[in-house]
Image 1: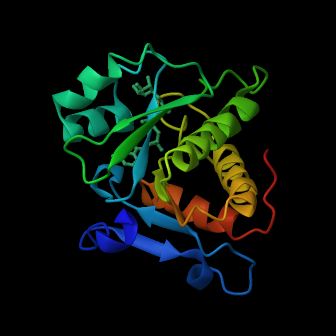
Image 2: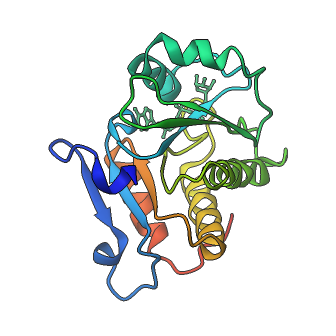
Length: 201
Ligand code: AR6
């Protein structure tokens, strides 16, 4: 199992198991919050916050494609794009992660265009792909909260609640990492994940 034999680099990033960050709360020990660059994580799959073309872009998408090398774009060209709320899987190419799961989050349009459900669907679809491929460890960025402008706190509640819901019925998943790029985002994840049964919105 890749996660236990090749852990990510520890020297410039920070991972905080929730069981130690918020004592007293009921946490699933399989969830961790990590601050740093998702492209450096040696998990079975990292999730890309992609767009429907799956042909690259800015933000974490650009970082993943530049770290993975041109083989990733070549593989993405064979996929025929992806619907919002869905996900597709590729190899990790030059990344330390074995696979990339490309999820297409919703663009925030005020909250009246099914954005909450579409964002939850990204997390569910990504975890379904993980399980379908017999993989056990995954790292998520904060999908839709950058260029797509989804409000950070609202997105975090949806991410945490949806992952908890899937973990409750998928004992085969060993590790889910929420990878936060900024200190502010990490603090929001730590606070919201510390609340039992955080609502979806
Ligand atoms: N590691 C972890 N998180 C990161 C990294 C990184 N290296 N870089 C950025 N983030 P965004 P979106 C965080 O904009 O909002 C692209 O052009 C960032 O701080 O990457 O879903 C795609 O092609 C933010 O919290 O994705 C689409 O067109 C989070 O990742 C569009 O952007 C997501 O920000 C998707 O927009």
